[in-house]
Length: 77
Image (cartoon, rainbow, N blue to C red; front, side, top):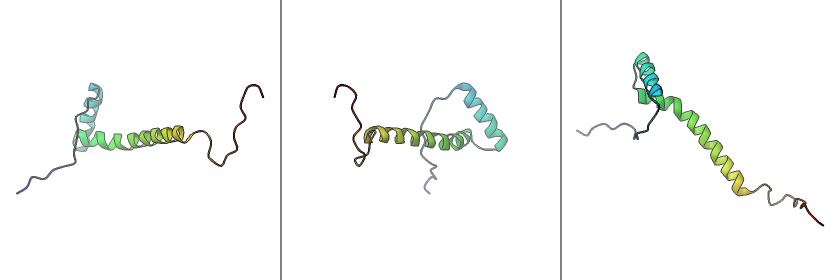
């Protein structure tokens, strides 16, 4: 019989106090600390990721759209 595999995971270092708190919360909830941390971090990191992607896209697209009139240049005319 094939072993049941859970979701893929990776080792990540976290501060000792974070790991301890996650373990305590997980014990209260009768869950695994890794599941508690994933549940808490996933939406926060997804939002931060979306913000960074949007910021990079804005940098790449430039400050003006192709239909916008050209901005006046500073300096001597």
